Every structure is written in structure tokens, then in C-alpha cells.
Image (cartoon, each protein chain N blue to C red):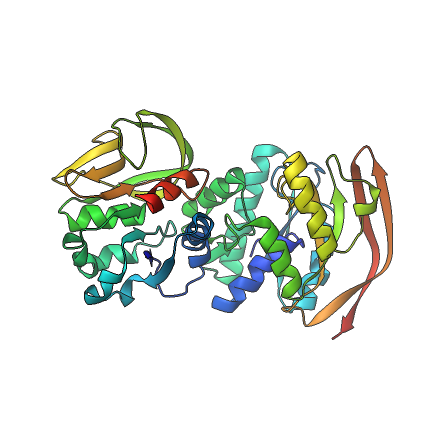
Length: 222
Length: 183
């Protein structure tokens, strides 16, 4: 499971668990904030999420430059195949033909299956599904107009989904944020054995770019 | 009633979300009534309730359908509109004595519509999302609608409303599915 800690890879993991066995989570730690492929805010917290869900995590560094990133991704997946004997990869890709085609090529090269259980899903329906399934999600970063500071660190709610729906109509943003407009972090969900509680965090925000940096957290029994 | 036929490796597989759900979502938006069945569940005597059938695609590594072509022999006798997408097109080709041949394409590629049909409209270039390791030879009785006889992007039966397209219309070309629903 290619895992960023955000809602898409977490929900894709949830769907994969319903049908198959998830052997491990793979996280690429990018040094590039504007990574082409990999989500970055709070990426180092995926270890805690993996622990909360009871999965092994394979954490792999990448310089985050466009083509090298793909080589790093391939190396990480090859390592997971070697260590865990995986048959395939699951991703949280929704719309991005760029991401999906590259993952497909990597899996083809490594003779692995590639699953994208959120592929082409209606994004607003999907956001509502996340809430109805009991996921607790925060906005861990905003990277585009018209997202103001109030979005940074906010919890995903029905009211927020309605706002995203309006912004989709007005500004053509992807309501799920897959175009890089916003990033999320999952604190709890039906596949979590423990939930994550944020004890300390800070916000940065300037010119429609903001980060919610988680500084201290703990796992809490459910 | 439109039948969406799931060609994935097993009923209710993890691939169904990727290759059947987006087509179901498009049908829902057109207002068309539809049902989904796995290809192993089909019974020829029940096909009369469907006025159109879509054979959906599969994952790149999933060629299970190709080993079970005999399960699709009903296609020869079904005379309502059929659309085969990727794996579905391969099945149509094989059933009508064409061949499934190694031919790989991944990602968005430009393709040329070379013959006017109700489904794809007038000849022009479009972009289609490809995800396949195998293509098809043109079966006897079929015409090339897009691509060439060497790389068949879309075909149509000469006399019957049977179409095959090798790219995935659920990605960026949902208008094709909408048109099919209205045929």
C-alpha cells in the first residue's frame, strides 16, 4: 500500500483490507516540498499511523526531483516486494493520469498488480463517504487560491464539503485536493485500532500556502 | 436495462472499483437503468432483459477472461448494442475469430477516429487513456473505427451494433459511454 498518511491512501487501504491482505505500507519521504508525486506535510508521522492501524511501514527517502522520484519509488516498491513478498500495489489515485500511468509502468516493470480503488470516483460523494465511514481527517496543508488560513488544521466536516463543492463550481478546484490544492492527515477511521490525538501543532500561512505541522501526538485506545 | 459485465479476475474483486464503478457512475448520471454482473454469472436465457451490454476492462496483469473466451460465446447470438472496453474489446475480437495480440500502451495517447459512427462521431483526433498489454487483430466482418488495421483503437461490426475500444472511455472520454447509453 503506497501510503502518504492522507485520506486517499488511507481509504484505499481500507478498501484493500476488505478484499485482500495488506502486507505493508510504503511511504516515500520527500525532501522536496513541491514533490510531483508525494504528499509531504507531516509525512514523517506515517509511522504513527501505521502503528495505529497495526501495519508494518517501509519508509524510503527520496530527493523529490521529478524523474529521480520515480526511480526512488520503484526501488521502494522493489524492496517491499523482496521484504514482504507483495503481489501488488494499492494507490489512492483518483483523477491524476500522470500519477496513475507512472505507477502502472512501475508495477509492470516489477511484475506486480496495480490497484487504484478510488480511480475516477465522484470526489464530493467520496468526501461524504469518508465521513459516513467514520474517518477523522484534518487539512494538513493548503497550496492554492482561494484557501484561506481557516482551512489549515481544520477537521473535515459536512459543512466543509459543501464549501469545497461551491469552490469546485466557482474555481474548478478538485474537491478532494488531488490537484495539489490541499493535503490531509487521517487521525482515525474504521481500520484504526487506536486513534491519534494531536497534543501540539503549529500553523504557517502566507499567500494561500499554509501548513499544519503536527509537533506532538499520542495514540489513544478506542 | 443496460448490463455492465465485470471482466475482472473474480466477482467483487478489488479491481471492480477501478474498472466497473466509474462506468456505473457514468450510467447513473445519464439516468440509464443498469445492473452489474460478473462474467461468470451470465446466463444466456436471461440476456433478453438487457437492451445493451458493456464489457468492462481489467487490470494490466489480469488476463483471466482470455483463458475463458468460451464463456462469451453468447456474444455471437446477442443482437442488441454491445460495447467492449479494452479487455472487453479483446473478448469480442476473440469470439468473432480475431486474435488477442501483445500490444502495450499505458497513459494518455492521441488517436485518430477514421470512420464516422454513431458512437464516436466524425473522423478526428482525440486523446484516450490506455492501459493494456494486449491489443486485437480486426476480426472478419468488422471495420476499423479508430486507429489502423495494425493498431486497432476502435472497431465496429459491419452489420451489428457491436463496438470495441481499446482505450478507457471512463477516463476523460465519458461522452462515449453517454452516447452508448443513448444508442
